[in-house]
Amino acid sequence: MDKHTFSRLGGSAINEIELQERLLMLDQIVVHHQRFLDLYQVIQDCHIFKKGAAILGETGAGKSTLFKTYESRYPKETKVKTVNNHKIEYDIVPVLRVELDSNSKPQNVASKMLQKLGDPFYDKGTEKQLTSRVKEHIKDAEVELLIIDELQHLIDTDTQRVIRKAADWLKQLLNDLNLPIIFGGIMEDAKRIFASNKQLDERFPYKPTFYGFKYVTEEQKKEFRGFLKSIDYQLPLAEHSSIYDPYLSEKIYYATLGIPRTLSHLLHHSVKTALKAGKDKLDERDLQYGFSLLSLETRPKVVNPFHGKAFDLKVALEKEKEKPSKN
Ligand SMILES: Nc1ncnc2c1ncn2[C@@H]1O[C@H](COP(=O)(O)OP(=O)(O)O)[C@@H](O)[C@H]1O
Ligand SMILES: [Mg+2]
Image (tube, rainbow, N blue to C red; front, side, top):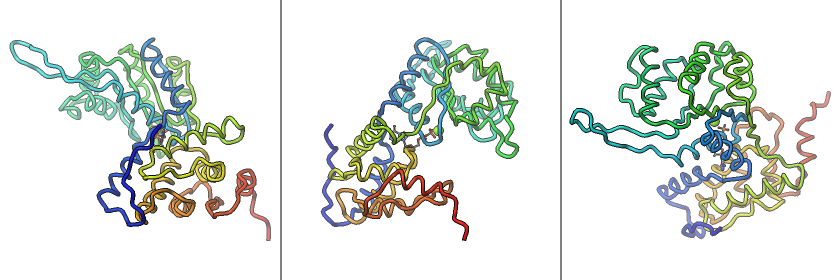
């Protein structure tokens, strides 16, 4: 794979417009790593063989990125038909992907679907009217696959209870439509939703997991480093950085725990500071600064590993877990 060519900065700070352009490119990097490809295949199989699957996992592992990638392979098309001598434009939507919002009611879910199906009056009507329009539009738009992401939002944020009304509505809709469905969401919450709704659960006998990367066995290290290497090729910098060298990849693993979202934040800050300093590749100091801007609330004892010295991942992870000594 060739590195995309970016103009060399050679020490002079980047201008604001180019900075924004390059950061946008950074945020759009999608690596087709092994787990990504395996789960892409799961979606494809569901689509072709008309089955359902729930792809659950840790937050930030890449579920929504995968769904967006799949959706983009089957783009919306506008067609024209003639009804009573009038030409009417309508949308063909082979893959309908919606993300649930927190504390969704059935109306909200229906509205979201209608909006994606191109209904200009997507938020007008009662729950019943919206629901029957969803069913009609899904047929007219020749939807072949439905992807419902962020399923965990069927849990109420205040009471932590499953929002039964929305869950039941969704179950009923799926029964009426008889379409292959992919659900995506955070593992623990989604499991609670399925546990509380047996009929919904039965429609999804297959629930593969989207994990973050691990870094214990040689195989896992190779995989994570391969991921970093693909990202390095696409970084919006003129030269290669060495983020996939064992020295830095181990530190990057510690900083991110193998979660692509955390990595993306780390790189965003690091690349930004490098570009502003007119650098053409990342070095450890950029990562040190990038790390200092991360908010890792769930890891109160995490330390900045990008200190320029040797680093032992196992020791560092154990140290982070230690209880404070009593004195
Ligand atoms: N395959 C990938 N390649 C590169 N970056 C990725 C990939 N998957 C996820 N990311 C990064 O992680 C971020 C969070 O991913 P997302 O798909 O929203 O996770 P989830 O839906 O599992 O919580 C993305 O915005 C992107 O920056
Ligand atoms: Mg998501």
